[in-house]
Length: 258
Image (tube, rainbow, N blue to C red; front, side, top):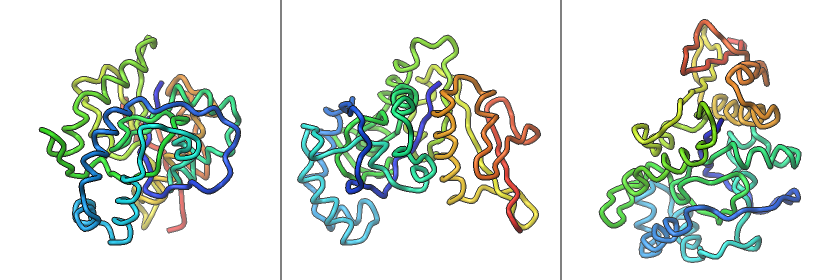
């Protein structure tokens, strides 16, 4: 089983790190090529390309200039401990036990516009580059074209030893679109998290993002190998809803006050 996550826009390079053995990212050549394209852009061009404020554009222009193909504990930190958005607050990787992080290293993959695929303990330098960005590089008009089949083939290789390769997608559709489904040789399971509002069950973005992180944490702590284990997820009031689920979609619902 391989669990897919999106990255986060918010980063944490300040708080203390638990004692972990970091690994090196696996697509450094591709990342370096993208950085060379990004380094040529002015903050104004970056602001237009990414639809961000001038301050954020200047911050990321500086990040691109500082980016190095040499990853060290001085200029980088493990990806799962650097991302800090809603999903990662639910995951709360800093409080996981060392054995959990070791398991996660082989069973969690973070999709990234700049890094392609990151393992939880892969060193990552700070960046911002959404997968949906229309960054032109060579013959590629955007990042989906740039990555092509590389991500799917990488995931296939990671699952190569498994009898029934299974991917649990906890990433957003923006990021999962970077996985070429035709090239992917694994069954994909989607997890949907719904809250009751005005008498109906709906996906509420903030809660759903946090729930993805909670599910990833649950799977890591249980060292999940089967869908039956995932169906036991019950954090923060969510429960598996068989009647709303299908073979390829697990739906979890909770009753919140209308």
